[in-house]
Length: 286
Ligand code: PRT
Ligand code: ZN
Image 1: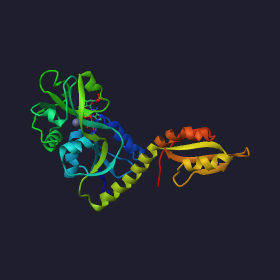
Image 2: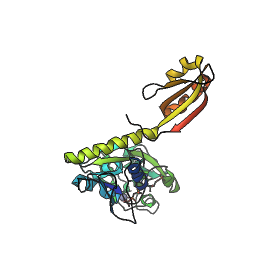
Image 3: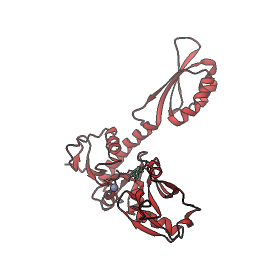
Image 4: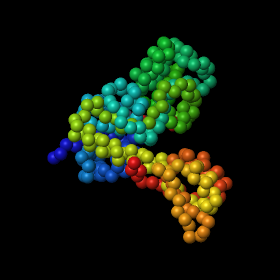
C-alpha cells in the first residue's frame, strides 16, 4: 500500500467535532465507527489517530503522528518542537490570569508572593519569569476556577472563552498570557512523500477556510450608480456586471469577506443597490 499520513485529532472534547468536520469538508471520508482509536480514510492516504488533546503535541513532535490538530495553548504549554502549518479559526480562547473580583490589581506586580493555581504550569512560569514576579505556582488538575473560593490559591491561570465561568465564580480576568485557536501542526521532519500528501491536504484545507470567510453576493444596480458601487466591491479579480432584462439596470456579482460586506451595506443601499443576495461558498480554489 502507498504511504499514508497519520493525523492526530482530539478523541472527544471541544476540538473534536470541528476537526472532523474540517477533514470531511476537504473531501476526505473518515468513517468513525464505535469509538475506534485509529481509522483510515477511504479516499485519501490519511490515517486518523484519536487521542487526548494533551498528548497531541508530543506525538507529533516524536513522529508517532505526522500532523495533528490542537489548540495553540497546548503547543505553547508543551514546548515540543512542531511546525505550525495553518491556523484554523475555531476553538478560540485565551489563557488568562484571574483574581477574586474584589481584589485590587495594579499589574503583574500585584501577583508577587501570591499562590496561583493552574494546569498550565509552563506557560504560567514563563509569564512570571518574563515579568520578574516571584509567586507560588500550584498545579491542579481541572476545575481551576474553584481554587480561590476554597482557599487553595489567591489567583488562577486558565482558559477563558466567554468569561462566564470566571463570572460565576466571582473572578475577574486581569492578564491575558496568550490568545489561542486550533492549529494544524506537523512533525519537524517529514519524508518527501508524506510532505507531498500534507501539501495536497493543506491546499484543500485553505480552500475550505477561505470559503468560510467569503460570501458570494449578488445585487441589482441602476446603471448610473455603477461608477459609485463598483469601487466599493472587491472580487476575486473584479466584480462581474451583467445586464438585466429591464434596461438601465445591471446585476453585479462578487465575492467578498463577510465582515467587509456588513460595513458596506449602507453605502450600497444609498447608491441604489436592490435585491441584495448573500450566499455561502463551499470552496475557493485560488
Ligand atoms: O480529554 P481531553 O484532554 O482531550 O480534553 P480536555 O478536557 O483537556 O479539553 P477540552 O475539550 O475542554 O478543550 C480542548 C481545547 O479547546 C482547549 O485546549 C482549547 O484549545 C480549546 N478551548 C476553547 C477551551 C475553551 N475554549 C474553554 N472555554 N478549552 C477549555 N475551556 C474551558 C476553560 O478551561 C474553563 O473551564 O471552559 C471554561 C471557560 O469557558 P467560558 O466560556 O466560561 O469562559
Ligand atoms: Zn486535555
